[in-house]
Length: 110
Image 1 (cartoon, rainbow, N blue to C red):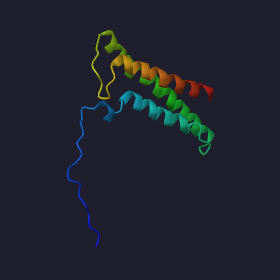
Image 2 (image 1 turned 30 degrees about the horizontal axis):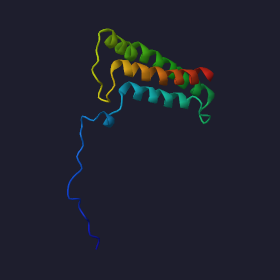
Image 3 (image 1 turned 90 degrees about the vertical axis):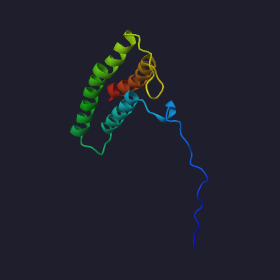
Image 4 (image 1 turned 120 degrees about the horizontal axis):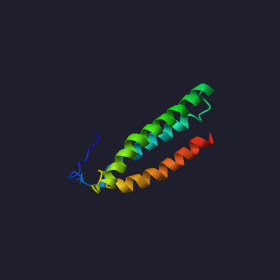
């Protein structure tokens, strides 16, 4: 017979800790990276890969119009509140700029 040993106490988590959360805008950009990756996957027929590239472009347009536009409005209004992951709107825009530049460069090289 196997004996199960139970821990004496349960671990506790501080749910206010920003390290426990992902940034939704950066997460959406990571999703766009996966869409872009599908456009270079040779297992897909050429037309399907072109569709993935088109979806990537359309999604990035919408992302900048809606998500980045909203963050820039927050910056213009002086909002300095932290998102759940601990970033201010200005910090989010800086992180988005870095990641989006990389993704758009990859997309244009195809």
